[in-house]
Amino acid sequence: MTQHLSNSSLHGPGRLVLAGLLAAVAMPAAADVSASEAGIVTAWNEAVVETAEETDQWFTLLGHRTLAMTHLAMHDALNAIEPRYETYALEVEATGADPVAAASQAAHDVALAAYPDAADRFAELHARLLEGAPEGERTEAGLALGAEAAAAIIAAREGDDFDAEVDPYAPASDAPGVYQFTPPHDFAAYVEAPHAAPFAMRSADQFRGPPPPALDSEAYAADLEEVASLGGRESEARSADQTHMAHWWAEFCESWCARLARNLAEERDLDAWEAARLFALLHVDNFDGYVTNFEAKYHYAFWRPVTAIHRADEDGNDATVADPEWEPEMVTLPHPDYPSAHAQACHGAAAIFEETFGTADLAFTMDSATAPEEGPATRSFESIHEAAEECGMSRLYNGYHFRAAIEAGAEQGRQRAAYVLDTILQPVE
Image 1 (cartoon, helix red, strand yellow):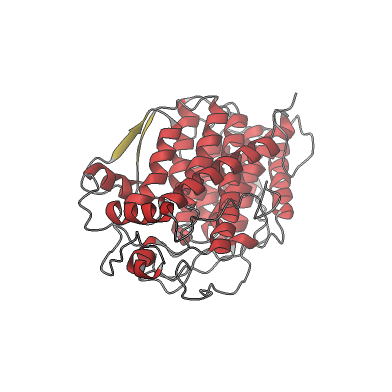
Image 2 (image 1 turned 135 degrees about the vertical axis):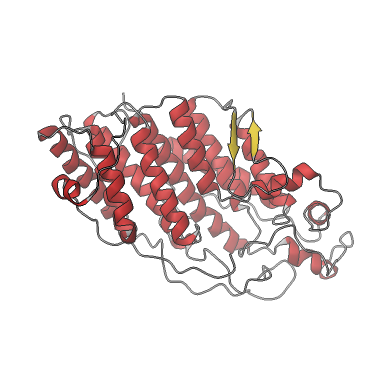
C-alpha cells in the first residue's frame, strides 16, 4: 500500500421489501439454511469481508465498522426473538418473527448503507437466504424486525467520527526515537482512528499501556540488534520457516480471523445465536483494537526499525550500531512502531475464540492470501494462542517491529478483549 485511501462515509439505511427483491433478482439455487445453523451469519460475514477488501483493503475504518455493525444488528435481531444474550442497540420482543428473515434483513440493511455500490451482491445473497422462507406473517415480522435492528445500530453509531477529518501526521521533530515516514511512504495511515468512538471501551486511551524502552537502555539495544539480525532482507540468521512465517502472516487479521471464525462456526456446529455473538464480539474487538492501538501509536510516535537502524549512531546508546544500507524483509507499513497493531489484533481475537468455544485448544490448518510461492500454502496449529504468538512474531521477521512493540501489542489485545467480553453481549439467565 503506497498511497492513502480516502475514507468513505456511511449513507442512510436502505430498505428492501421481499416482494420487490424477488421480482428484481434472478434466484440462485436454494440455500440449506435454518435458524439453528451458523450459515446465515457466515454467509453475510463473507460477503461484507469481500466487499471491504475490494473497497479499500482495510486501509480505512469503514470495513471494520461495517462488520461490527452488521453482526451486532444480526445478534440483536435474533435475541429479540429468543433472548439468549444481552442485546447491544435494540430492546424489543418479537417472539413470533422468523429468525432467518430477521437476521438476513438486519445484515442486508447495514451492509447496503455502508456499501451502496454493492447493492446487487447484497440483494442476491439476501434473496438466496430467503428463498425457502414461507409467505406469511412470520416472515414479514422477521423482515420488519431485521430492518428495525439495522436502523437501531445505524442510529447508535451516528456521529461516531470513524471517518473524522483530522490533520495529517507530521513528525514533531527529526529527533532520535520520533516516528518518521518510512520508504516509500510520505504519509501516515489511520490518523483518524484515535478519534473514533469505540463500541465497547470507555475511551480510546483506556489500554494505552506503558511507553517503549528508552533509547539508552539495554532492552532497546537488544531489541534493535534482534530485528536488525532477523528482520533484514539479507538476513542470514532468519530460518526459512521464519521467512515463510513473515510473509504468510502478512494478511490482515480482519481477513484471516473472519475466515477462521467461519470455518470454526460451521465445523463446531454453532447455531445462529452463537455464531452471531461470536462474529459481533470478534469485530467489535477488532474495531476497538484499531481505536486504542492507534491512540497509543500516535501518542508515543516511536520510530520504526528501518529508521532506527539507519540512525543508530544518533540514539545515544553505545551498544547499538548503525547500518544505513539495512532494508526490512517487507515494506514497512505507514504508521508508528509501538505498539504492534498486528499483535494486538491477533491476541484479542484469540481471547474471543477461547471464550466462545470454551477452550484455547482449537487445532486448525489454514491458508493465507499472502502465503509465499516458496513453501507450503498452509500452516497448522494446536491452539489458537499458538497461532496468535506466531502472528505477532511474524512482525519481527519481516522487519516491521521491535520485540517490545510486539509484546506491548499482545498485552493490549488481551486486556482489551477481556474488557469487551466482560462488558457486552453477556448471556442472560
